[in-house]
Image (tube, rainbow, N blue to C red):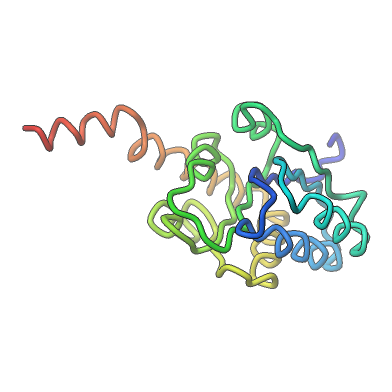
Length: 179
C-alpha cells in the first residue's frame, strides 16, 4: 500500500497442517497491539470457509485477503510482500521457505521440519514454536516495527540460499561426492 503498511504473505494449501488458524489469531494480537498490516493468504483448500469465518469473527476482514490459488505464486506474489510467514504445525523440507529466502524476504517460520536447519533464528529469519500464537505475534510485530531488520534478515536469507541451496551449489556437492 502507498501508505507504507507492511504486506505479510503466506503461501500454502489451506489445510490444518499449515496452522493458518494460529496465524489469523496472531494477526488479531498484532492488530490489538496497534500495528497496521495487510495479510495475503495465497492458496486454496478445504479450510477456506472456516478461515474466512475466523477472520470475520476476529474483525480482521479489512486486513486479511484470501487470494486463492495463484499460479507461480513465488514469482508473482512474493515481490509484493515485506514479510513471509509460515505457520505450519509440521513440514518436511519447505520449498516455499527457500523461495522466500531467494526473494530476499524477512521470514517468520515455525520450528518444524528442516526450517531449523535452513534458517538461523535472528540471523536470516525468525523462528517460533508451532502453535505459539503469542510468539508468532511478537515476531511479526518485531518485523513490522523495524524495516531495517526486515531488510537485514531478507538480505542474509538471500545470500544463504545463493551460497547453500542453489543449483550450482548442489552440482558442486554432487561433483565432490563423485570425485
